[in-house]
Length: 276
Image (cartoon, one colour):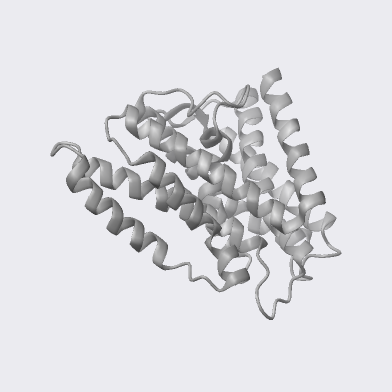
């Protein structure tokens, strides 16, 4: 637990430093880096499960897909062809580079990683990227992205602590035996408090409609989705017979373990906030 606390505090300090010194460009670079590293771990989990995904080229496509809203806004490069192009490329490679018993698994695991991780984390880039005629300041967009990440991650923290304290009823014993309904409700409650706090702290740059009350109310469904997102990663790790997705972050595991709850929360947060 001490290692987990130390890593968590260090990562939040690093995030604040990136946002403070490098603003939107730093946030986009961090999101893309985490997305690519998470995809790498996902592909290795799939390889351990016997699916033989196309890791290296998949990571390249993944980084481009996550970055696409930024390049589209800055340089006018269209974002939509990337996933179609990746499907074409990996369909051809699957036919020539995988044995018959691995072909379907190689294609589906590669493309699922691009959709589930790269495309969904792209919504964090969409949140921080200014658009033409924007009514939200660049700093406001940074705080909105921070709001989404904080709600999802502090739901994790609240669920862990509440589950350890009073957890009695397993929520998904066949997927993640340690998760409890008490922990889930505690996680949502903590996330609502954090959602209200971030909305209050960012009141100078956030849209006037996102006050503390609305911040708390919107945090509830976002936190619920974050719990589902966490369970999805547990399914992936269970399929690969792994406890953690990696070992690069002491006390936490890998980047997939770090960002698991944010993956589904990113698009949900984008649409809940009514962004474009």
